[in-house]
Length: 312
Image: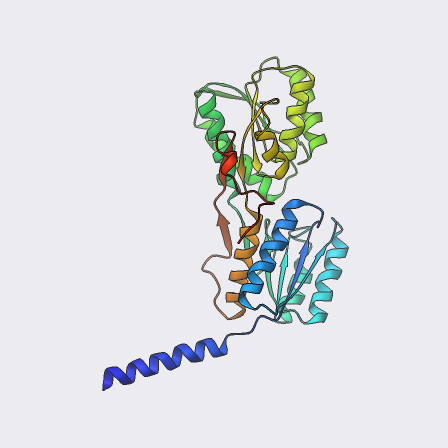
């Protein structure tokens, strides 16, 4: 009888827990650009997860197009609309702190994706240190532990700094690897990678490999290598972007060999899942959740589920 009573009490407690869970009615999403496939995948992942929680949830997604003031206005609009959760990719990790505080004071859960934002309830991002390690281990293996390499740097945000850190740790642990340069900013862009690589090819008569901190830089660097008719230089980068995926499938331009891929769809769906738990008082033990990158190479790219792949 006592056991039956305890079971009944337990079931009542569970039922009460489900009954008291907040219904997810509205989410506001602010992303850098809705014309970029990375952010399109983020938006799709967030909306898919939100609709799993509540098929009738209202999801409002906007792009701030690199205008920080516009992102602040978007957060204010979300607050005025009474959303329960804000998912954002911060235009500036520190400058958004007052807007984030205002949202939290209104009882809104704020989740940052891809890069951290000061004051956010939690952040979901790729393990960028690991991404740098994975890409540069690939280079070391390809060079059999010996060669002259370049670390092509980028804008000094947390993701880029971590990628370079991971790469440096791998190279410094390999005595046969000589780093020729590690401080040139390729601006995370194709044009930036092209310009930096042109300069480095002129400066260094022998380069065996390049680690580019972002896929667009890798593509620009590969173009410079092709234009200057340099041979036997391999490139590894980080992102897993559609353009890089296409490069890995193109045998006519073999310089690009690998990328440590991110999964923005999973990143955003995880952010919404954990944000909803936080909305119901269940916050993760750690405020930063790191997702594992995966190495995509010419050998396995045909199995790669990229940013634009259809999801269940």
